[in-house]
Length: 217
Image 1 (cartoon, rainbow, N blue to C red):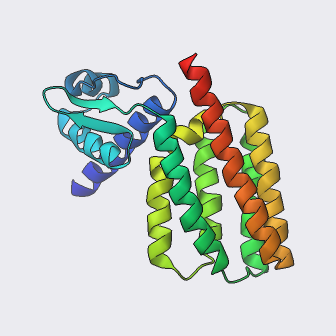
Image 2: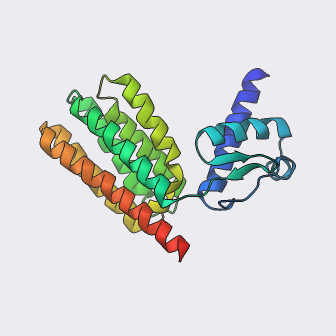
């Protein structure tokens, strides 16, 4: 029973995350446990648990006398997340062990999956594969505490990733940049690896910033 409860809660978290990231639950919207429990066909207890997890991931915020609301996205927050991401990922990149043939093939396989998803409209599936790709690169570093922290920052950035990857053109561009990262790793070229990684980070931030600007106009 406990296992089914945990799996059920994980599924509810995934469903609510998708509703938030795709804008079906909009920034600033107050969430009602009873309404969502009916919508998802579950009890209110796992809904409450899911709210707490999503708040920890930065997708929800808790306000006194209002409860949980969908977090608003701001350029100020995006700038902070980008700064932290740059500092942490640059440190990880400088400490990696060069990947063997198996690790390189894994990265190529993930990027091929992303390429297949670039035009099918599954933005959530695309960013989940994007997470897996970058986690695989980070895992080449022995700095496990830094990896944990950059993963936390990455999770807080989910809503901005969706904004950036809303178009198939942006998704295809990310796949091209990933191919450049793989090539730099295969060549064991640290200077090129840091360069293309920085370009990818900055490009992702720029795309998200543009999406925020469009949303305000």
